[in-house]
Image (cartoon, rainbow, N blue to C red; front, side, top):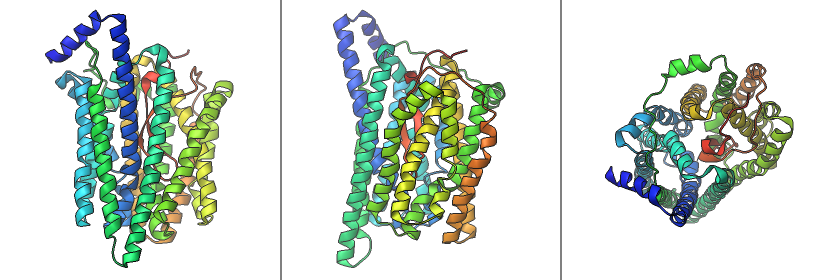
Length: 464
């Protein structure tokens, strides 16, 4: 602990040049952390459901393994303040969680070598992955906010977000082409999935190395001392009562209702594409790329729309736009049609997510945002897991028949339409920003990226 105290004392006595060099160092390694983390998401996490299918587990399990364990990560965030207080350091907790997430790839590498993993083990591994990933959220948000001066936050976090988006894109495109190459080798040999499994092992190994590098970059950043540790926090039920009738509370309720409907079908697009449509790995990667790239391209336009016409109108457009997206998969399985669907999805999700972040956090005082973000993540992960379980039950009862997938697609669109009732209850909220820095936590096949907002990239004050 003395090292941290000494580091803080040195910071106070530094010359202007020394502080500038330290700031430059912190910003550079933070960018490196974002890049390494992005490669891990693109190469490792994105292909987990396809790996589960390759080793012989069910289509339902391939969906559950990337959804239900997220709830554990949301729950772990609730103990984050106490863990930070125990370690007397945000940095130590973040690095620990990052290494835990890296360690979750080790059993996956072993499973790729032996060609099998039990269903329970896949769920445990995924739970460790999400516990390590989401567990860092609140502590990292406080820490990074203390490192980046207010005057450069907007530019820095925009640049950091773009870098991470590019590395995620490179990761999952590279992974898709590598898996396609492995499949062709297997087809040429005329036996099994040996080469595909070997490629999965390589992808998970690279993902492991990237997360270890990410953790080392985090460890290389300084931690200002004293950095306040939030030990006291309102109980969840008390927080819910506090926000229930507020503008932010109504918005939160709408978002959670939508998330439940989205995740009835969200985790099951990957098995549908692989097992029912028999898509190649490259087809899968390119479809994801369409939604991801067009979402990135649409975000600046959505920001300008929000600045001119208001984030509330942007949310209305996004909320209406996402309604037919899952149902469009039942119209046709033509690849060109699905590419068009993905383009539409990218644009609509960009509008929806940007508007939500701008409205939600603008309605909350800056000193309450970390606590509210933790509450949101818990409720969001619970809705996500509940929706996935409902979808999994429906698929299981129907023996994973093709018509059951289409039932989920239509049900999800119907639920999103019904949720508009709650959108109309959200009042107008004046916003000052038009962009939000994000940390990409999960990339889903149809564009509904699980992003974590970087709170220090938001305006510090709420508007009346």
